[in-house]
Image (cartoon, rainbow over all chains, first blue to last red):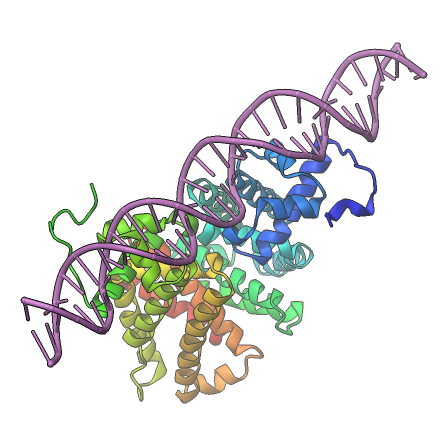
Length: 202
Length: 202
DNA sequence: CACTTTACTTGACGTGGGTTCAACAACGGG
DNA sequence: CCCGTTGTTGAACCCACGTCAAGTAAAGTG
C-alpha cells in the first residue's frame, strides 16, 4: 500500500539525503501537476515516509515548493555557469548546448522551476526572479565582453528587456521540446541562437 | 462590512450580467495573486454576493478560473483579429499596436490569462493552448500570404515552434512592461517586431 | 552489548477554505 | 394580487493543511 514496502524495515537517512530525496519527489510532482493539486500526503507516500516528517523538514507546503524552486534554480545556475573568455558567437552555441543538456537531464526540475513564474507567491517569485536575473546578467556580461556584438548591443535602448524576452523565448521552446515535439537538440539550439542574434543584429 | 452595503436592498441581476461581473472580479484578483491565494469568499465579497452564488454560476473554483481564462482568451482573439490583405511587414506593426492596445486596456485579464500557463490544470491548459494555437495560426497565415516573408519563412525547419517562441517573447516583454518599466508603447512594439523579423530573416 | 542520539512514526486534533443544499425572496406573467 | 420561476442566501459538511506530544527504532559510541 505505502510506497516503502520494498524495504520491509524502515530506513534511516542522513538529514541531507532525506531532504534531497523529498525535494526530488517534489520536483517530479510539481512538474506534473499545478501547485494545489500536489498533496503533501502524496509526496510523503511516494518518498516512503510519514506526513509528519515532511513538516519536520519544511514548515509549510509553500516552503516546500519554494525549496524545490530554489534547489532547481541553484542547479541550473551551477550547471550553466559561463565559461569565460570565449568569443560570444561560439560561446552562445556552447552555452546553449550546456543549457539544453541541463534541461534534458533535469526535465522535472526545469518544469517545476518554471511553475514558480505564475503559480508562486511573493517569496517564490522573488527566488524565481533572482535566478532569471542572474542568467540575464551572465548573458549581458558575455555580450558586453564580445568585440563584435558588444558595440551593436550597446545601441539597443532596452537591452535588458530584449534579453529577458529571449529567455522567455528559449524557455517556451524548451518546454515545448520536452513535451515531445520530435526535434533534435541541434534544431532547438540553432533556433534559439538565431533568435538571440536576430534581436541584437538587425 | 460586506461589499454591497452601498445598496441596502439586494440587487438582482440577469444571469448574463451577474456572470460577467463575477468574471471581471475574478480577472482582477487572479491577475494580482496566484491561484491558490484567491479565495472564493473574497470574490463573492467584492462582487457583493454570497459565496453560494458563485457556486451557482461555476461548479468549482477551477471552473471559475477556467471561465476567466476562457473569457479573456476570447476577448484577446476578438480584439486582435487579423486585418486581411496587408503586406506582412506593415501588418506586423499594426497588429502589434492592436495587441498592445489590448494588453494596456485589459491588463488584468491579460495577466490572469497567462497565469493559466503554469497554474492551470489539464482543462485550463487546454483552453490556454487553444488560444495560443489560434494566435499562432493567425500569424502563420499572415506570414505565408506575404510575398517577401513567405518564401523565407517556409525554409525554417520548425516555423511553428519559432512563432510559439516569439509569442512567449512578446508575452514576457508585455508583462514586464505592465509591471511598470518605463517604456513607451513604441519601444515595446519595435522590440517585438524586431524579434520576429530577426528569427525569420537571418 | 548496553547506551545515547536522533531520525522517524503515530494518531489525534484544530483551522480554514472549498463545496453542497434546502430554504428564501425578488421579479415577471397571469 | 397571487404565484411560479429563478436569482440568491446561510449554514452545515468535507477535506487537506498544519500542530503536537509521545513514542519507536536505526545508526553511532563506548
